[in-house]
Image 1 (cartoon, rainbow, N blue to C red):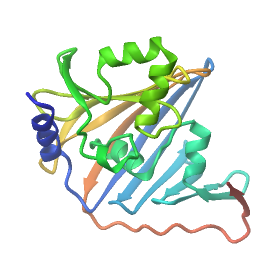
Image 2 (cartoon, rainbow, N blue to C red; image 1 turned 180 degrees about the vertical axis):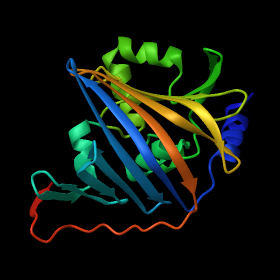
Image 3 (tube, helix red, strand yellow; image 1 turned 60 degrees about the horizontal axis):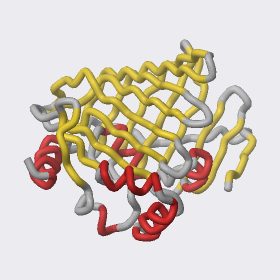
Length: 254
């Protein structure tokens, strides 16, 4: 099946919504030999705002609001709140992460990592069969091997897409349900990889949606995050108020 046909089928099966919420999120984190766990919830107003609340046991820990340009975070324990442009998070993570990427991951939808508008429709992506799924990649395997072997080829390829460093994106699509089962980002320049696995799909309002997400990051530091979702709903009445206590200390992040 062609890339275009696969992508069209995925788009047809994506959740259609104006707002969505996940009332119960169980999160466990493995990092540097230590384990952490907490509970959360999140809600999304399409193309507008993402709000996340986190708590440890029954104690509220913090909340985060992301918009297409900015973010705000409240940390209840130290009575502080943080504000900054969204590109601050990109700098901290070492990847150019925009609002559309956060939104797509939280809703299991397609997106292109590249910022170039001509790549929004995946015209330069290539399709193969891998591990019983369709794998749609931003760079052919053969091209990747050539680029890695020679520095001048890497530089030419990077300049072609006007990128500071080169990241290959792989999208794994279930051939039966046409949902995204896995996303892999391979940062070639910095030798680091981030993968997201989506599993335990359930039918919600006529659409398949994952109830488990596993994120794995390998680089200078390694960590793994496992997320279980429940009480998922679409287009139910939601309040998107984001109140910041007046006496909390403000910290601006640039």
